[in-house]
Image (spheres, each protein chain N blue to C red):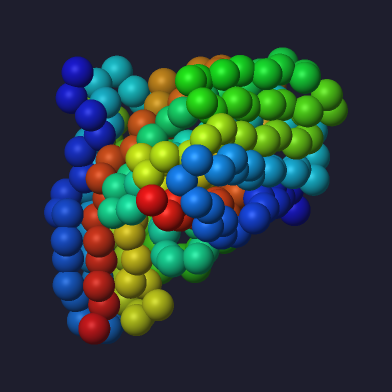
Length: 114
Length: 113
């Protein structure tokens, strides 16, 4: 079936180091969304990428969508303790009749040592 | 605008019992999805409802069921609870049109003893 693989599963960094998480889909996606879940919290939408090769930035976060629309990455520059949490990607498949399906990665849990 | 509201926030049930969880989406949102989250398992999709119709369903046994009402509020029911059903159950609402994100509620923490 359709899958989105997300790596790494865990990442432990020193504050100030960079961090990257990757998502790879077995099929071409319509678009991809990224969410962040703080410990004890619920997933919160970060961004959506729609176009092939798209790159978007939010302050220290850089999101990329691959040319084939099958992979994506989230890069955080100079991590801070506020970046702690689990980052999920959700691949979106859309088809005729206003049908849509989200395929979730398992998430990457980021821990930051102060 | 009020966010997604899930009730109850916490629940303790005994094996074999049944439970009903409730989700009120953001006003105007007609799509409601349910997820089960356990440590290390990410978000496991249960089902999605749009305009009272189930649009998508995940790979969960028939003990898990749901419904959506005309006001878009949704309920999820789990019958014959098992210990493995202990999890955080998250509800997410969206407009269900292209290029829209999901807004999650704070979840219901279910513990089965």
